[in-house]
Amino acid sequence: MNRKGYRWLFSLLLLPLLAQGANQSDLDKLVELKKAQSTYLDLSNVDLRNYSFIPGKIDLQRANLSHSNLSGVDLSKMNLSGANLSYANLANARLNQAVLTSANLQHANLSGAELHQTDLSGADLSFATLTTANLQQALFIKADLTCVNLNQADLTRSNFTEAVISGATFINTMTADIIGYDSVTDRKISCG
Image (tube, rainbow, N blue to C red):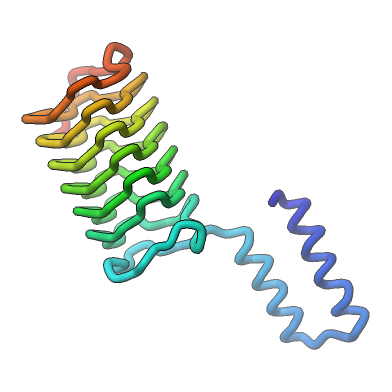
């Protein structure tokens, strides 16, 4: 909903309360509701290993999950587009068919994670660790994989159209039937 829609909804909820002489606590609750609707979820620096995420029940779009521990968590089919997952621990997490378009995954640990058919288009994965990750049929269209570690990962049938892979490592990586590899940007840089 856009700002105009929220203003209209807020006015619609506020007018009957004013007409009936609403008390201050009711008005405070409406103000808090309006504030909550215009901000995004902040779960930074939180241990979420035991939390059960259910697609459609929690909105993680543009959520701040930086420095959080999500190791082993099932985030399959979740929409995390635009989310900040920088420095997050996602080791052995399941993100199959998740949407991570334009997400910030800088320095994230995705070792052993399952990202089968995950959309990482436009995501920033620079300096991320994806060793032994399952990335079959993942979309990396226009993604930034600068200095990413993809050692022993499975990239079978993944799409790298216009991705940046400068400084990335691919030791013992499965790369069968990769799509768009002829359009990647690969410059010599130091990742030290």
